[in-house]
Image (cartoon, rainbow, N blue to C red; front, side, top):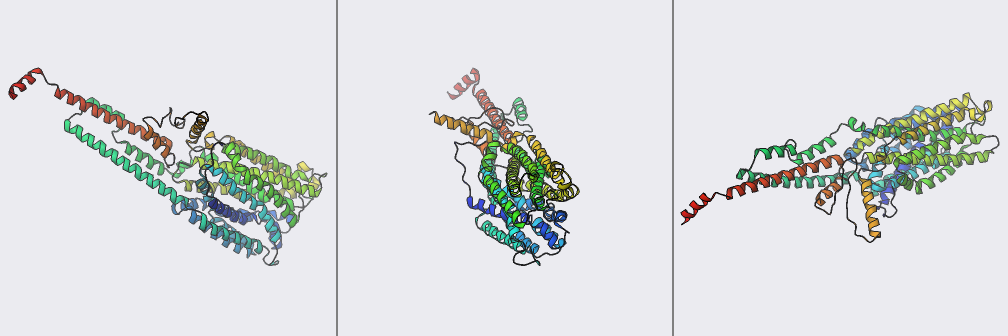
Length: 601
């Protein structure tokens, strides 16, 4: 939830700008062909006419996304091992090369190979984008996601306009797509330069901080072990061990081992957990399914609306030309850009990740189902184009709001994992499958429906175009239902709600003129009770607060401190036994005392 009385954390705006440029280069390589893919298929002889171009045009974005599926998880592993920055620079180089070779392709299979290999398999942006937004943004990750999505949304809708305006210009019918592709090369080079200059390596800084914390904990544990060994030697020298004390101490410490062994075992178990077991933890399977469905609907809209707009009037489309389609997409992009650049971050913070997903999906479904209804007989052609742009703008903004919610939920769930890059790569693979299925299923389905049930032979609500849009709206509403099934814990990272409540209480106490007593309440699902840092447990509270930034789970941290408390109780029992033995040896009988006095005399 958003707290108005707290100042926002500072952002590295240069790094965020570099991320936005990378997203522009990435999305331009995908969406610039949406406006001219049908014309390119006809001009180069890949399809017979515009009504049948959907069968071929849907393959161009499909092969790009299909290339990501086998490599997305590998990019996540590479991001964990070699760093996010190197992965991003290599991906931008591949995007630039892919744009050049696609513009020079005249064969369908050569164009599909270029998009699958250079723009798909060798592009790791989707595997590191969510990681970078979370690591650079911290508690403001929703704002960073909103900024990145706003630039992507701008290119999703302005990119096709640029592609439509520049298609066939400069190089004639021989290479009609070369000039739009060269624009993509320029954008990729600008993003490459900005990344090299301004984007820090977030992975290495995180590993350095974790290594420093591990060394500090190891030093504390060595000191604790040395003190315990010294006390044990003193006790053995005085022969103070008793049978009942030994049994009590062994019962308290479990196997009798020191608490640092429990801590090491907990960290090793968390770090060495199999990937399958991590992915099966609830609610990760549901989040992966939602990401796949959300990606499918997003790319289905990007591909289906332009194809429907250029379809003939008899089939149920708007029969728009290249420039008219570019104007419609530009107008829709301006409206959605206003929302994504200013309101999407505050909306996700105030609603929460789960509610943002639900509300965005419901509104997107309502908007998409009304788009084919603008072909009503009483609506003029110009008004129909403007209404289509408005509905597409609402749909795109709502889909991006839902996408921000599901990505924020992914970051919140994976915040405590050490191999977060690998898991995000697997989630990106699942999302890529959905994005591949979107254009691959919707484009041929639209072509089949408008050919088998054209508008001139049926009514508006029984036409093939309306059935296609209605089916996509149904998928969005099912996505909203799945988002409602997510637990409320995905709205924030572990421990954040308690800390936010304490911050709010301190703020209210300061306003009332009362000195606030700093208290920190652990997560309700892990620990019961309340710890007072100003009291005798302040060191424990400081360690718990530090543990929130470590890749170990909160429950393991609490168990470790329980073991440390047991060790303190063990040392107390040892000291008590020593005092009892010393007292018993000094209190001797009177006869012994009398004999000693005569001997001194």
